[in-house]
Length: 384
Image 1: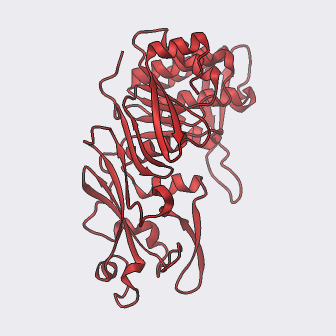
Image 2: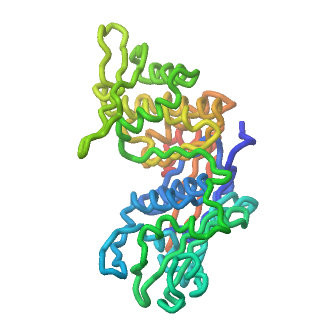
Image 3: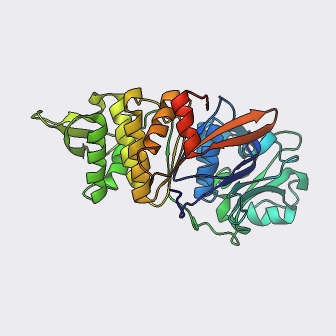
């Protein structure tokens, strides 16, 4: 049963990182993305995160930071410092050839656009507190973030001629450039909640933090119930202990404890294994993504093949109940088959499988209908 209130019922990406152009004509309540390594599956998830947060500079920096897209710069005083290399946002990593990228629905109605443009020395003197006579105009750039063609953020920076190094009289302005242009909003206007689960395990401290958001609510009961059903362990209660204080060089002492029927004392969640911890993380993240997005990279990690159907049934059902739009990637056939089996359990479940392919510099999507996903799972048709 197709959902009518999705934040993105389709997706268009142009000029972003390794994707020159990609159009996915249909996304669903839950969309599972497959494809070989290097075709851009993770890039699609990053694009959705940027769209949801309307290109806020902190999201741009976080996405690129996780990719180690960092460059070491030298200030005018000779001091070295590290900053995010925003040039890597643009396809081909060359803003002279590709000066903008866009993310949004294929209808073009609500596009997020990010442009890299030249600045005049007069504009630089206003936004960067630089003497207009100090630099040549071809040394100045500005990244402008627009949504619905309205400017949300401006990030001005300088670039040494004939190099990819930035220099700046005040390095911290590189990150706070949005505050230098009074004509641009510094607020996260019209943003959509978006949680991100990477291929690895999240730290206990972060999971405890998002658990705090649902503790003592109906979502807590839903989460514990789902966790209990999938894990086949009768978990009676879950609690977070510790004051969360961090000492220098030491992680927070917050821990997640579970009370299991038959045990007189609570036990640490992590003692149940990485799979149990990841399942719990999924359940809590779904509850925290109400009316927003949840993006998951390599969804199969830590999930045993025997519970894939129950795992996807949890995601499909909870996403429907809480109005969450889920986009996940996988390399696993067991994951695809479990997704297909869960979809067939109920007509109300809305899911799509999308295979991403790449030939030369072109990226394209092959969507599968519900019936095609069923046939692929039944007859072992390769869709990864």
